[in-house]
Image 1: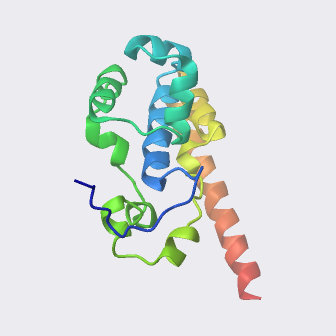
Image 2 (image 1 turned 45 degrees about the vertical axis):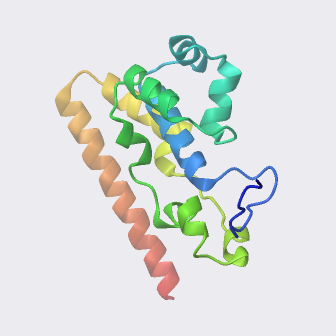
Length: 160
């Protein structure tokens, strides 16, 4: 008896599923926020650091039992790995792919989440190393003001 093959668009060889990329980026984000190396995470769940790298890139899919282990070691609920998933990424799940044309699947481009960038993580760590809460608060207010000024300047240029 042969297997029934569903008519599901193919992403193409070598292209990870965007949902797997998102889950991997959340693993990397949490691991980095905890200050944990890929090697230490791998040891905690019985993997090599290369396997952890593949999970973080989305090159390897994370199975349910592995996701459970990751959640325990990284001290987050399993749902954490799916939090903040953009609609464009969620729409790439295999269930949703049945509803989409092959053209739409091929044109997907994954944009890096600024919260998952090393620079952001280093900034957050440095921020929390500031012991004096008043200094930390002033830095926070200054950063918000600089961001608002940059946003205003950019919208002024766009309006011209």
